Picture (cartoon, helix red, strand yellow):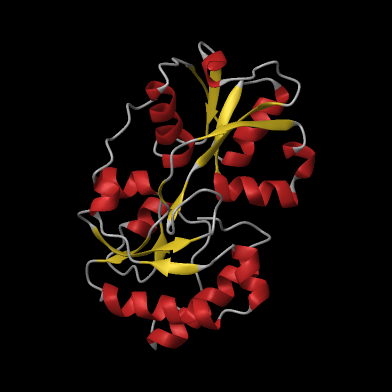
Length: 239
């Protein structure tokens, strides 16, 4: 997760430091493979998943290592939220105005792109139309810009990265509101590993990570959230 071209070098460095602390593990990260194959591999040492896949399908198949803290606005340590965005040219001024509007979403098993906004809008008694499934937060943002959807919910960290690296897209959008914070994207390992040892290695690696790489990844620290922090949240209705 968050493995974009601009984060590739920093992610590679973070893993090399984790591996150095562990004393074992693959020499390189696995990129561009099916995430479900990676997450469910009996040989998995270290990966990151989304909170919704963890609680919906993975919690009894993997171990939780810990949760990275990204220092996000108005979020407790180890938590994140979603920004609900509309076109900057839109007249939508309040949440209720999204009634009947179409929402682009990146994936039906995305906490930030589907579950969080669904819960937020239901709490506000604001029914919406399901718009296009885009495959990524960036594509959801672009769908709003192009008029394919009226709004979208973007992972707050991804939004910060998009604002830095894709201002041509984000400058055409406006943040309407933010969802309630939920536990951020967890680090996981297979049942065959020692999760506590890996957590200690990750913690040390983050401390040794150069400032530039930490800034690129927006990493602050590793937070030890209990699995219950994820599992106590209800599962959303599928799109």
